[in-house]
Image (cartoon, rainbow, N blue to C red; front, side, top):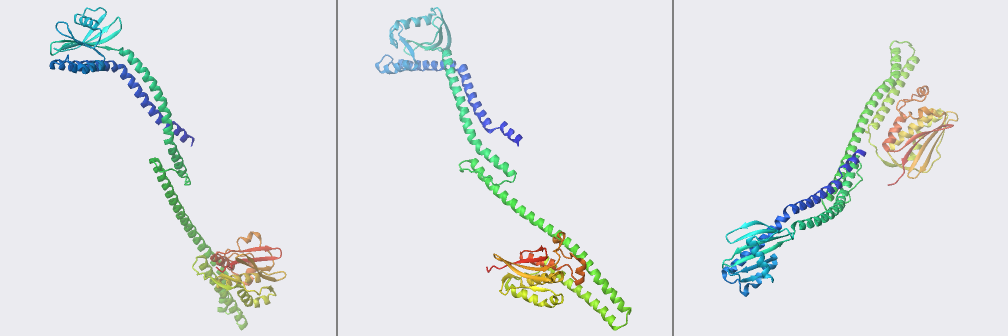
Length: 499
């Protein structure tokens, strides 16, 4: 994470944007400074030269028209002189002044003569252009450190014209211009830095927010959302990332659900395979003893070990008893198999639980009397519940049968209700030894027997409590067992709601 942040700082969008703007502004200022130093003087002289040539062309045209000295040309002549800052002297062949732009005509005439005859000391001239009608000079006065453009020519009417304009110190002007440009450049650079930082941060802020959102998305955290106003491309990108986040969240949720279902299917298949193996192992083990007894007594009958009728009847009774045990075990196994695999239909109906329990007690009265057991069920009020009546009868029968076979000490069985909101708990308590703590978690497993010797006495198969657990699971209701100091309590819960 630290490396990523360092990389973000090193390649910060703000720094890149600011550096780009700063480079552009600084480069522009330097370019202007270079152009000023290199071309400003030539450009200035070029403009002055064009102004003088345009003035000469205008005056020449007026002289050709014969209106050079007319009052109608006064305004045009003044504009040429003022706009170009040009001193003009027009004289005839005999030296008469036809037009002039200065009051000191004599001084301008002397300067004109100096140019014609190069008699002035301390000056240097450079011929810039020469035609049949005029020649243009650049004159430098080294004494006064001044420069001029001078044009001498002959007009169409034969008059002579003298034009002169001063060239301010172009180098000084360029220096002043460059200093001003440097001040402006520094201010522009500072202002551009401030503006670019502000603008880049404004641009970078939503991008950094999107970067953080994308980082959280890589960690499958889809709660982060971009809050934009939808005004620009970044806001549109943020909205698309939000949509992508929702799509990924939904897709991953579906994948997890599918994966969970697949895992459950795999676990179910594994459980079915294990149940099948356990079933075969347990059935083969449980059937081994009765089959051995049946085989042994059948062989005894075949070999006529005892010929008396009483012995034969005894052998037949053993065979029939073991066959009945096997038949009952197979029936219970089929019932349990249907419950565990969900092949048995649960018919939910409303019935009186009190009446059902009294019917089971009545059916078991002979066993209770034979074992000397007293049973208490002091409930006369009806208790209406929602469940499968046939399966609830199976649960009560198993609980009561289990209690009868394990009752000891006082030989007492108590059946009672405990109302708890929308549920009723049915408890079947019998006096006797508590179930060992290490066996409590296994009593619901089929074929598991806490006391194997005692189970053999009454022919138990170890399937009854497994059937109870499977039935209650099909109801989506709870069942359990509680150890007491003087006995054991088995219980189950049913729904009493009317809706």
